[in-house]
Length: 273
Image 1 (tube, helix red, strand yellow):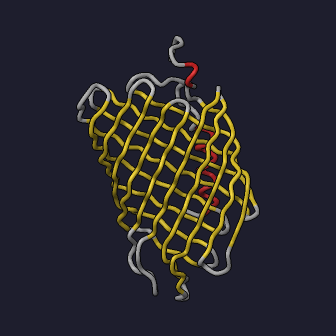
Image 2: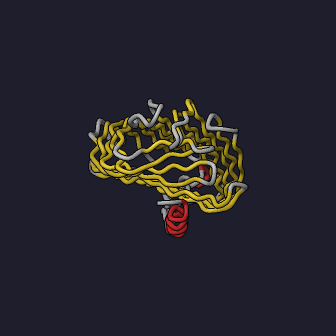
Image 3: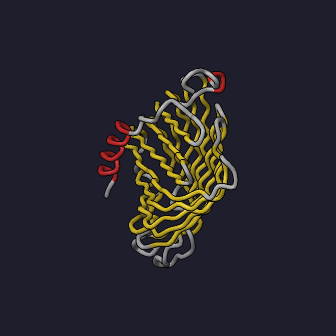
């Protein structure tokens, strides 16, 4: 699927993802952020340094529910806009479910399985992958005010591709991958860190892993949401003609301002929260 397909998917997710409940009761954490996002991209190591910036409409909808041991998690993101490198868009998400082995009423180790995918980019970088099967092992704390998870995960990228700069690319089809995730939400702040490592086969003159690191922080003030994301890729790429681009790096930084469904700290204790 090309960028045009990614943008159509993004439109659908932007329209449908802002549906989380405005509540954060015991054993149930849900929040949606939606608004305008400014972002900048830099690609180095794959030909001349490429830079771009743009503006998109973006949203992120998260939900984690644990009831009687059963635990379900989703994280859906979408963006659509325009910048100095043409159309920009992304659509991504993970849906997984499993069981938490309670060591107390609000915490314990867990195991989940599901599917994870992403497609997005612009004229200077592009990334897609569909990870199925996908599994996760970790530890969770989820109570009235705090959500914490630390987990390790892995799976198979059944379909995928990465491209950056002037012709550097790497197929990600039938490629194993693994990584780690940290989530910490304590009203009114949320921090998410996701590291992924793909281990693709050799491509022309290059080999070795492709790494992706996302660090996202969000703050809710009344019903305003502020989200900052740093995204970093690093790996060896090559062109179809056999040119090698070792240690190519792609970096993206974004800031989103908009609406948040999260319950702010001053609202805790009010009826319905």
